[in-house]
Amino acid sequence: MANRASQRDPDFRMSRDDYLAWAEQQPAGRFERIDGVVVAMAPERVGHTRIKGEVYAALREAVAKFRKERGSKLRGIVLDLRNNPGGLLDQAVDVADDFLNKGTIVSTHGRHAVDDHTWTASPGDITGGLPVVVLVNDGSASASEIVTGALQDNHRALVMGTRSFGKGSVQTLFPLRGNGAIRLTTARYYTPNGYSIQGWGITPNVEVHESDRRVEAFGPEHEDDLNHTLKVGAKPPKPAPVPLAADIPSKPPKDWPKYDPKKPSTDFQLQQALKLVTAMANAGDHGTLVAPATGKRPI
Image 1 (cartoon, rainbow, N blue to C red):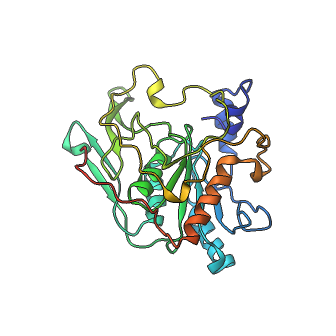
Image 2: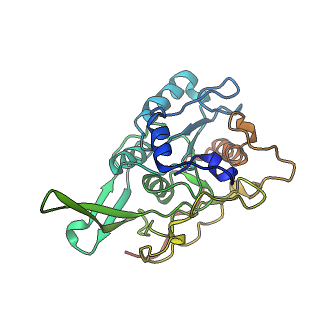
Image 3: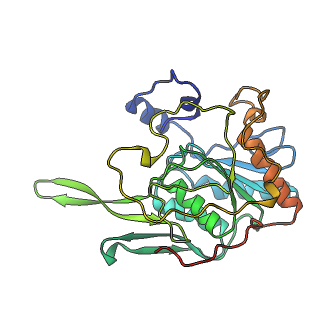
């Protein structure tokens, strides 16, 4: 998966080996200071965390640092999973669990009962119940979709951005004679509400695009754009409208400044996420102000 530059510059080129070499050099977590406030925080004192690649271990340490330095002045968290291609299942479960006190995180269902598993949250929210907004786009895949789906379906966070990639299949490695092996798809990942991530991805509660025009993509935008992809199950319902987001535009205005990764103020999606999570904090909402889903689960 390429970085954000690949989606903004149609002339961008990077080989797989070059990307793997680049990814290997990236730090365990990227935590910044913006406007003199802790870790990519806006003037409203909202923590903004971008988690890249497979590494989630630094999240707990970073949130603890936010809370220690800012205390009651820390009003919310923006979990930025845009262009996050995923990582390990156990890391995704741990991240989701860090924001939850109870509930299902993710489940797998396959052809055989042995492939069915469910992961649930344990008590202990490292944020102390702060409002959370998760940012996603078509580069958010696999483990990052597990985290997003868990927080969305458990009404712990609002999701903003565009539909995620939709990589929700489980591969198992089977050994063969002669020191060989074959990797087969044996199951699919399902969100707590029982919908398949495969193909559909995660649909945000609040749709916000990064540009007012179509941005050239680096490869397929979604799993279901590929040939010979797995068939998907029931289509997840569209999330209910979010009253607090009624005045948030879905696209930036024509005069919005050109995106500069060194200037968070030019990141339209991030700015809207900061606006939303601040509104949640002002409203005293530590959930999502969205009524729980009703009806029979599709599984």
